[in-house]
Length: 152
Image (tube, rainbow, N blue to C red):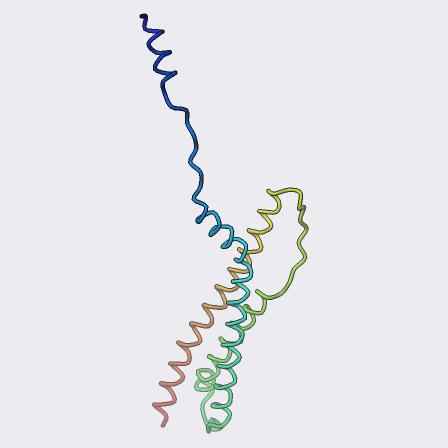
């Protein structure tokens, strides 16, 4: 046997490359994650709107019934900062819920994918900003609470 015949026999004996099939569970899971991503972001935004509304209502009534008439401007800023931060958090959470008009070609999967990614990225960014303001509001609330305790 010549070298060429040996090489051809080795190549003939090699198993053909067969790509592995994706695990059906993970494929379904990925489809579910992608399919529900926008609605889950919007659900979280709705929860942020509820949390902000409740916190603003409770805090505003607590401030309204307190004796802040003779406090300095600096103190008023400290006490108002949680309200301002909650308002900003509420504003960005509501922006997540706004519907926009998107020009999409349903016959092009590439354009559809880009549009979907743009929607998800935009909503996620707004939700993230809302969450940052919500966290900062708790820091401001702690500062206002400590300020109130030092005044009592």
